[in-house]
Image (cartoon, rainbow, N blue to C red):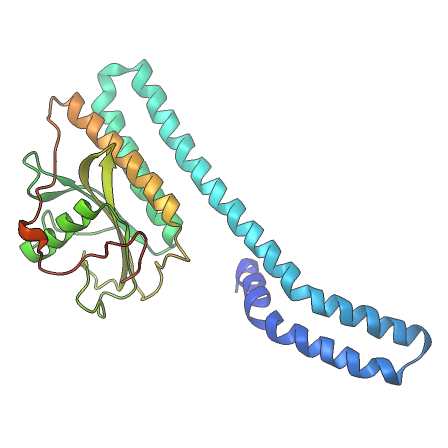
Length: 265
């Protein structure tokens, strides 16, 4: 077991149980002791009572620091490629593709060590989704079956990030299958300004690996926006036109996509 896992186990599993027990034990010994031993029990009781909340606070600070580091890494990677855009205009299309690759990789790495990610872009007519970039997804479908595609188009229209706790138990809500029967997923609409560009999908093998508590919605949204901007710029560089998502008839679809921001299915 790694040092990080041991620390996490102590901070979130054992100490919430161990700390109150130690505090109770030291408290029972105080009336039975005198002098220096009594003072030792009092000090030990105070320390044991403070240990769990202090370590929990330190763990939270560490998580926030790690999240900031990950965001900085994304910004740095994108900034490097944007610098190339400014100095080497002939390589614009190549650099924008590289930015998209970096972004979907960062999205997966932030989510989970076993997570995969894929970006499906809207076709020129805005009626379909086609594979644009993928990370660790072998044999990803070039296009989805119509029932899945309609649900994803509806999710793009809703603009909300959807967290899928378990693909096998969605209760009629949005589900996604990129192969290998991954159980949890995140579906994030990809926009450039107000113009839809496609959808970012992140998945992981087990249920509840990609919940809102584990994967920050603000991070996913930021990556999706950068991804959309890079894709729109790439379309412009290639002489393409803007894309849009057609509204579903009467707002109906094959399955329901969550419309509440960040809500889990």
